[in-house]
Image (cartoon, rainbow, N blue to C red; front, side, top):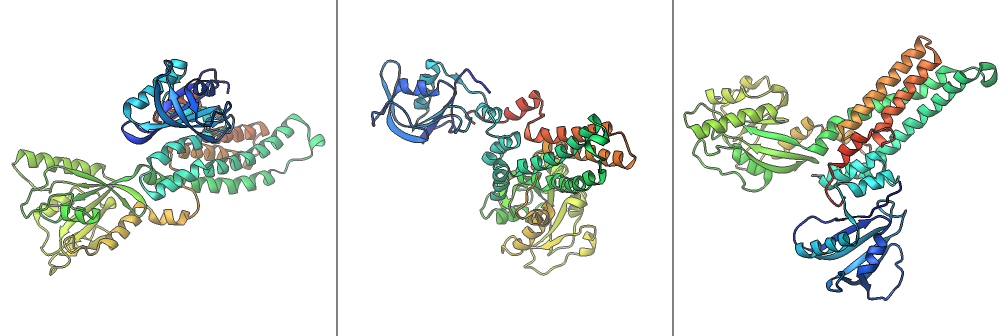
Length: 456
């Protein structure tokens, strides 16, 4: 990629801080630095990948700040171009002054994701690695961060390139027999082509199936705590969070709106939602809270239905039960530290019923284990050192490739013309190329990089 302009943007988030970083990338990056930077070492030329201490001056020779400057020469830089990073003090106005200095020298303000886009266009990253940059930044749990880092380091790319190489080899053999008669290239044993591709498709199916876990790791899940008033929902939320976030009183209807808090459970990023108690009420504010609880019950990924184990189920309990989808509900039998009066037969439709005492902080480990199982912890553990797909775009591309290869297998079975078999292999290759960026349309590229922040 040949770029004629040099771009600049702050790498660090806006606001006050100890240090801020301003990055330049492009053919004039070093020129702009030399015009404004006075090194304490008096060096005339910058060595690549060295940090220099000095002062930054504007066009009027007014000193802006004491800074550290690092130079990274092409192609050994993030973008593959000449790159400069200026580390200055993190004042809002100071960063603005440093930006203005380079903008007035001729640099252009970078668009969101433009540094990474240049890295992709210059071959420093493929598209799946570029997408992982955002996921590393936005990871909300250690496990999701590790998966994103694996993708950034090329774990997904290596799989896709291995699949593609196998298809390219098969396609080359087919095309040789299309272009030349058998007496020149020998007869073609289709079985020798099909068997390794069959094994490859099995891998691709497993990889596409891993998206169910990958999506949860990347996007997180919403878990709603639902039940009648005064059953211990807010106490359960506080117990899971390990801090007092929800107001707890003996007055029914204390919680009138939804309260959401982030949490990490078994490696999964979670939004824990405490909702108003479900009951019939004439209070307009509480009625709105109940309506919101019902709405959250429909959209939540998982519901913790809280019931009081020390009392029989009431009409209000049954009203709350009516809001739950059985397949995404875990029954939490609260107040397990008290004599139990609840009839478990009335909850037989639910496969998971976990006794806890939110007040005494007991039973939470068992509850977290059940939650982890429902979120796919077994699949995550089975993956071990393997890889999970976190982008729906990648899953869809894999499924399209699998469909093309299944068409190829069917073509072989019915002795379809080699031209038709070659077409199926090409379509499979094109689908895989969507993941790495080899065949991705420009409008999709623009959409992907628009998700990035300024400076990345």
